[in-house]
Length: 162
Image (cartoon, rainbow, N blue to C red; front, side):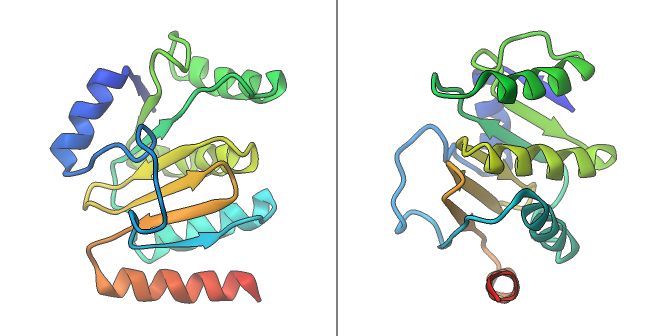
């Protein structure tokens, strides 16, 4: 995992064909589709692993985390611990973008799941233009150019609601 400044992260997103979903307001019309999400962390991890199995997001992943004043200190301590283990010395507010390569696949899933369980705002972007925005742990918004991905994600969401 590598941490990047907002400026460098936005350049990578642009090169991948994305725009930042965290930095702007969003309505349900902005994404292809969305779902209410209030699952515990193990279900969230299982859901994200299933998304990975259907190749919804292609590596490398870029994750953007919005830093805000209302986090709990123990949550930020976990994030800082993970970041420092990967030589990220800047504060989250100064380097809110994270790049994960193939070797970091499980870390990316766990890290994103943590931000969902913390009810932070974060977005996970894939190399093929697909993305998931976690809206403070309450909603997951999905962007995809693939009709088959939309169908598979909808089926997964139904499986996780039952």
